[in-house]
Amino acid sequence: MKTQALIDGVVQQTTVLIAHLATAGGIRAPLARIANRVFLELSEELQRQGVKKNVIADMFGMALRTYHRRVRSLAGSETEGGHTVWDAVLDYVRDEQPVSLHQIKRRFRNDEPSVVSGVLNDLVGSGFVYRSGRGDGSVFRLADARDFEQSSEEARREASEHLVWLAIYRHGPATRAVIAAELRLGDEELDRALQTLLSDGRIEACDDGGAANTYRSTRFDVPVGASQGWEAAVLDHFQAMVTAMAVKLRSGRARARSGDETGGATYTIDVWPGHPFESEARGLLAETRKRVDDLRERVDAHNARVKAPAAVDAVVFYAGQYVKGEEETRDDE
Image: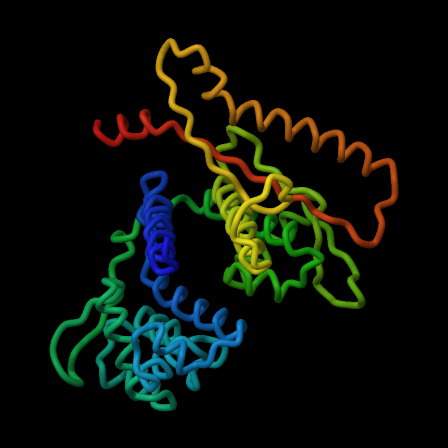
């Protein structure tokens, strides 16, 4: 398979996953920021890998000037320090609505006019903001909150707690700044989650070389059947899968070997009702979970009795399964 075809396939499948997440549980999550975050974070990652900006612009099919303008719109605002131009304009429209284009230009006169105009076009095109009228007299309003049904406050709070817990478990010892950068939660939401996690013992504060507000956790667990925390469980699984692929690609070993410690494997097993191996095939996930749970319990018991060395290797294992025939039947109903 050509690299471009592989990238197209990964993007398409990731889009399907995001669409399912956006409508999980009957909610419709706002997606206006998704394209911007993908663009900015992909640009930053390519730069970290040493790719020049003119090459990145060409990869996005943009002129270098257009690329720079797009990056500036997602970078820090000269008017609202600590916020991107995109977020600052959105917040201003929300707080002052209805607000005219003239007012917006005056408010963000320290930012490049073409960047502000581009942000407004993005907001309107995404359906996140409504515009009426023409020219400087045109008026902008935020889309009604009822257009984006939200889950209950309690559900959002518990989801945030699990996501923060997962970030600390994966990246700890982690400072508050690292956690905030990883999750992009608001200060109030992040602090509330940290306080809850500290109080119930899921995480602990630690002194990592004198760094303040540093946290760690030796466990992360969303029990099978739990109604809350599924968001973090999905993210944990997705991160494990993507990281395994990325590590293998960075190593330059694209093909699998029987003794690999990093990588993945996918098998399709065809069975039908009455097939002598039907129950064994369908039970692979349950059996694998049982084996890994048993191993983890034995490892945890051993680790509790001995002092771990300074350097510890975390073996991250992931497994997944679905029954294709059943999925197609549900989609057709």
